[in-house]
Length: 261
Image 1 (cartoon, rainbow, N blue to C red):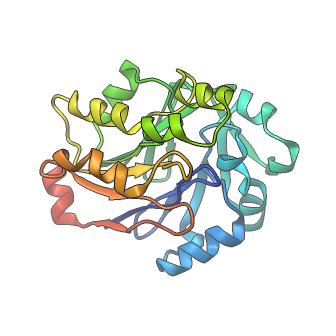
Image 2 (cartoon, rainbow, N blue to C red):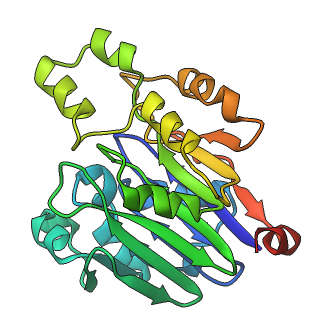
């Protein structure tokens, strides 16, 4: 049995959980250890199962809780060398394993595919995690769709896919001009429309469940993002994420895994 959820997703903190009955990994640790523990407890998830944390890039909303979490619980951290060097020293764990974008990393029963993405960070990466026949993607903070993204998304059964902003709300919202330009640039974030178009372009895909992720508090609304994906809801299960609480916990049993396989 495999359990998948967003512990947090948004510009104030990101953390994603993928686990079996014996072991688990996190992608990003952008909220405090205390909050990670609290939210995992709400879902009856055991921190002792978490063996590794993979970091997508050095922005604080993805790495803020890394050092305390890893050093307290003896969890291994994985991030690119440039990300480690660029990250604030307060976020550095005692032990960190470095990788290059494109590497495939095996941790216990997990196989973690890493690939480059477009974002305004030093060396940003996305992840596709394989475990027991299930493939889960964590694909947020993306300025533009590339072939790598599409190819990996097509191989996912479950994906945390960025649906950051509504274009009208961004234009009419409180952000200054330069920040609006940054958000919608090729190094910024995916809009609801861009995320929908990406999913519509998928061809031979195993994708079943999409978590709408990194939803902006200022330039989007959960109901707006869900509405944008409404016409796809007959083909895919569409679930929202939350910055202040964990998402729905998706559990995939052996029978479902057999169907995915």
